[in-house]
Image (cartoon, rainbow, N blue to C red):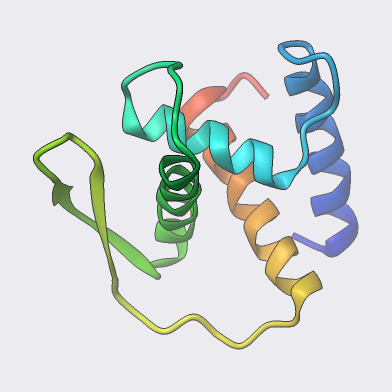
Length: 117
């Protein structure tokens, strides 16, 4: 996907997600939502540390599409454990954001919307 295509599809996704929220979500909010989804325990109160862990789960999940992470299992509390399988390339902040957005779009296409989108 080109940068322009990523931005167009990202805008479509955030507008669709805005229906569930009162405002358009940013990348951090979307990553948090993916983390909650992947944890599979539903909406609940999470501590600041747990929120960071949820975002980490989301990043590992979406980067697993490019083979950077692999699900190893779950811990005794049911939280996913991911292991790094290859080193991430050095990217500037804009390229990092584009990579994450591209994989978030892939996640929603595969895991949430199916062939709907």
